[in-house]
Image (cartoon, rainbow, N blue to C red; front, top):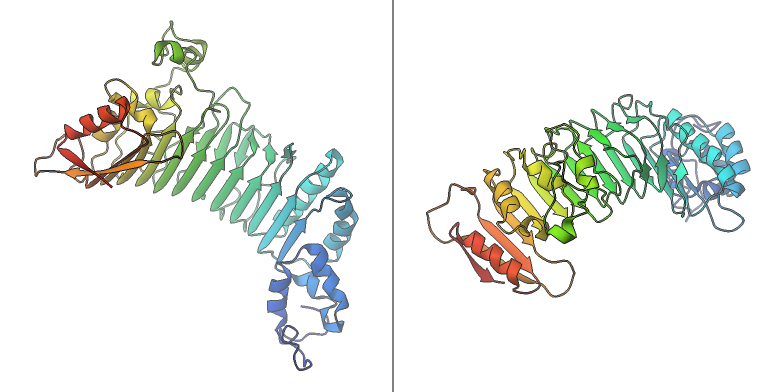
Length: 405
């Protein structure tokens, strides 16, 4: 509390000064939405405002482009860290559109201070052509609840959050994740978007209490997902940046496999393990989206040990699952989804005009090879081509009939 204040109530103010009439605690919260420079400048408004900035519930460290974004903040923040009152912070945001190499230690220092001050939500966004590497991310906090990283490099043996028992949300976007493992027993929501790993191995993700997973456009070896028993929603999109692709696919029109006659990638993938890389970890999901490019073999390999999706109610698949001549991938996942209620097939590559057909059972007779709970089947496609006809014909064998929406 600022000097001379007995409680959080506001002193008498002039008529019309509505902001000045607010209690100190509310002003502390309001100032946390301003960049730290602006929050400190409020000290000149009046005697009462002189110390309010020292008690803000959050810090927004935002770099500007002119004269180098981080350099101009160094001295300012050195003084701020000394003069500011030590109290638990709700939020800390560190955002820069560029940085210099000698700025990196300062950003790391500010990040450590944020964790030491018990920040609950920490955001570090770097919008730069290079990644800013954290020099040993401080991973010990009894307060950290949300961690949002953008444009950050992580180069550790493991990203272990076992000393962050309240961490629930982890977001990583455009990050370099050069770690062997991501570990957390408290994490509930995990989002990994447009990230990459240059390690010639799978990043192992062990987050048993996760309820929401988004893995989109990961560059490098596909992350290995340990079993997530509480998972509710999962979205996995393996783009052409994935390195688990068959070099002979364009010639063979199929995967060459992981035997001795396989291509360099397929044989290198033969690790002596029968575990699923992706499907085993997300097999408890209730809602799932699985999207892949045609030449990526991870899902096909996983289907050889296909788990049972015992809780799965809604499923979205793209054309990857319908490209095999006999539709085995689609048939396999449907066979192992006993309580599925809604199936959506997106048979298109572009976002142009799309035709949508809705299907449902046309009689009381239901095939044992598909969920008896299935109520809706959506098939979305740009044109009635060979693949679309094959899919519709396949689904009709289960007494599913379609109408055009």
